[in-house]
Image 1 (cartoon, rainbow, N blue to C red):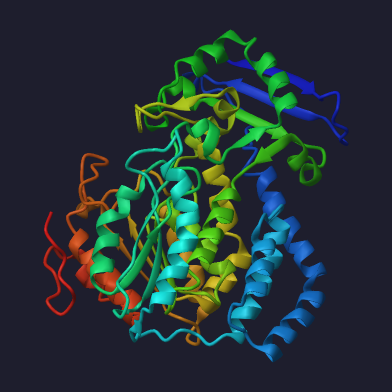
Image 2 (cartoon, rainbow, N blue to C red; image 1 turned 90 degrees about the horizontal axis):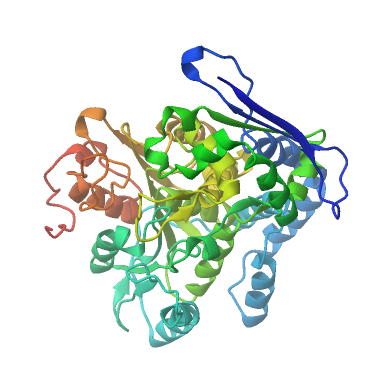
Length: 494
């Protein structure tokens, strides 16, 4: 049996050209029914994020070129108070992806004017002034969270700084995966700290608080539109039953996975921001603010991230190639693996459906997961890839059994980096754990069980991350060994 609902919805106080057409179809797969489906964020949002932006990018190309020439002539000057204030104002809010594309173009020019960090690092000395300035900036962010009534224990941001007079390689800015906590990356953070790096783990945007519905970035219909849509859709008893019985995207039933949503616009580019509110850029806003907080620390800055944290690490490096020397990412979430999950989240997220099994004590709205998907699409845009390929040495580690991130998309992303960089660009290094090696998605944390397994090769993963950050290279075969390299700092046993 196939159920079908079709209507036009227009809030009274919003004036747009064209109606919003929503088709909801529940299809019995055994009946072999044919249906048309198009995901709102894989079509409308794609158009908004890609072709439209590329066209607009061409329009401001000449003006940005003249600005770039000024940057190249003037060089990159050290931060003073005035420059910091100007940059903070510029970074306050990227109100649209178009503005981010422009920022990426400008960042590429700034990086061209700056001196590239050497692949092999030399240590620099920490001074009292370095430490006091950096602590003051980071504490402004951390202390209010520690005193907040909704703080999430075990997920609070923190930093690891060496003492005055000690020598360091630089600072690692580290980001964990979606819905996880800073504990997920804590062992790698400690290993890098013990071996010469300052480390700042600020946590993903809002993840240091309980109540994800209130604090985590979401993609949602605007309130009046959402109210009207919910009234219509909840009138469908079969669809309501499916939504109400939902518990986890990890194990969608046949009925749930057959639900399709199609949102069609007569003019999708201008209408998308009219109907939807998206907070996915908040991940980037917060990461940029945290980067600014470590500017007083000596030496280069590196981004390291797992899953969604990997996507944030890449975006931050692409926007600030003049400040970030290298980036290392693990199981990067550049596209959600299962298309059925993506489509179901886009629909059910509008009704407040929550994922309840990942963290039973803290369920989160599916609209938060949609924001992750939209952000990952942005990171995969051509403009960001171009800057990363030409300016940022990268290391990526994938696993064939990844049940969250689409490993084929990740590998293609890295192949594009290598192709664009050619022989003249920075190194882009990657390795993939095979199905037989049974390395799960959260590979950085050796104690996190996922898909009934853990990463047995975590010692080597830590060592090769250290080698990459300090030398700009890896020994790929070592990643697939259970033994440690005696020539690199040893990893403490569990």
